[in-house]
Amino acid sequence: MDFELDKELLFLKEMVRDLVQEKVVPRAAEIDRTDEFPWDIKEDLAEHEILAMPFPEEYGGTGGKVLPMVIVVEEIAKVSCSVSMIPGAQCLGSAAIVLAGTKEQKQRFLPSLASGEKLCAYALTEPNAGSDVGGIQSFAVREGNDYVLNGTKRFISFGNIADILTVFAKVIDQNTGEKKLSCFVVEKGEGLVVRNLEHKMGVKGTPTAELFFDNMRVPAEDLLGAEGDGFKIAMQVLDKTRAEVAAQALGLAQGALDVAVQYARDRVQFGNPIGKFQAIQFKLADMEMKTQASRYLTYVAADKYDRKAHDRGKYTAMAKAFTSDTAMEVTTEAIQVLGGYGYSEEYPVERMFRDAKIQQIYEGTNEIQRIVIARSLLGRGF
Ligand code: COS
Image (cartoon, rainbow, N blue to C red):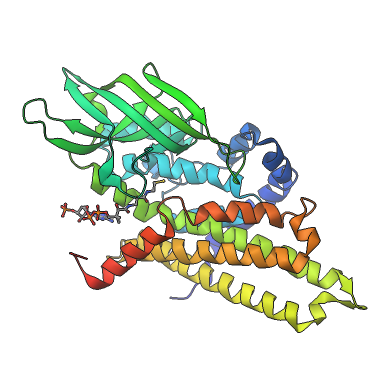
C-alpha cells in the first residue's frame, strides 16, 4: 500500500511537531538529567487531545486508531522518547479495557483517561514472569462480591503514578484448586503498595515501579472478560501496542539520523566537512535505508491493525523487532559519526542510544517477537 499520509494525518503530524518544538525540545535533556516525570508536558498532551487518542469517540476519545497514534509517537520520540511514552503508556494501560471491557466498564473508566485527568498502567510482568506470561504467580480469590488480590508486579511503567491499572493474576477456584489467568481493572487504593522504583539506563523521567498487592479487594464487576481470559487479553493488548513501541524506536532512529546528518555537514576535519568522506556517507546511507524500511513496516503494521487484518499480530511483532533493532544500530552509528561529541551529553545522541536499548526489551523482547513471527510461519505446535 502507498504510504503517502493523507491530509488529516499530515495535519496531525504538523500539529505535534509544533507542540514538540515549543514544549518538549527545551525540556528533553533536562527530563533525562533530573529523571522526573514531566507533569506539565502531560497536561500539554492532554490539552491537545493526544492522551485521548487511544479511545473511541463515544468514551471521550478521538477514535482509537493505531496509525494516527504511531505518527504522533514517532514525532515526539524524535526529540524525547521519554515524553513519547506518556501517550504510549496511556494506550498500553487502557488497551485491555478498550479490547475486552463491557460497555459499562468502558463508560466508567475510559472518559477520565481520555481527558488525561487520570493515568493508567499495564501490570503484567512479575519478578519471575517476564517472557513467560503463563508463569504469573499473582493470584486472586473470590470472596463475596470481591476478588482478593495478592502478588508482586515488577517493571511496571508509570505503576506508581497511575490511577488505574490493568492487572493480570490467576483466579484460584477454592473448590477445585484450578488456576485461571484473568485480567482486572484496579483503581489505586488500599492494599496497593509501591515498593520500589527502578534506576534505569534510559527513558529517564518515566517511572518504573514495583507494585505489591496485599489482600487488595477488587470488586468482581471489575474483572475484564471471564475468568481465564487473561492470557488472550494480554496477547491481544501486545499485538496492538507493539506498533507504538515500533513508533518510539522509529522516532529515535530518525532523531539520531537528523543529528548525524547535520553534524556531517558542519564538522570540518582534514579541511572538509566530514560528510564529504565516503566512510561517513556510507554510514548515513545505511542509517537512512534502515530507518525508512522501519517507517514503512511500522505504518503498514499500524494500518493492518486498524483494518483488523488476520496477520496484524505478526506485523506489529515484525515492526517492533525490526525498528527497535534499527534504532539500536542507528543511534550507535550516530554516536560514531559524532565521535567524541557523540559520547558527550552536549549532543542528544548518547541519550537516544540509551533510550533505544529498552525498545529491544519491553513489550516482549525481540527474541519473543521472533518466536511470534516464526510461529505464524510454522503454525501451531512450534
Ligand atoms: N491473540 C490471541 N490469543 C493468543 C495470542 C494472540 N496474539 N497468542 C496466543 N494466544 C492464545 C493461543 O491461541 C492459546 O490459546 P488456547 O489455549 O485456547 O489454545 C493460548 O493463547 C496460549 O498460547 P501459546 O501456547 O502460544 O502460549 P505460550 O506460553 O507458548 O506463549 C508467547 C507465547 C511466548 C508468544 C507469549 O507468552 C508472549 O508473547 N510472551 C511475551 C510477553 C511479553 O511481551 N512480556 C513483556 C511484558 S509486557 S510490557
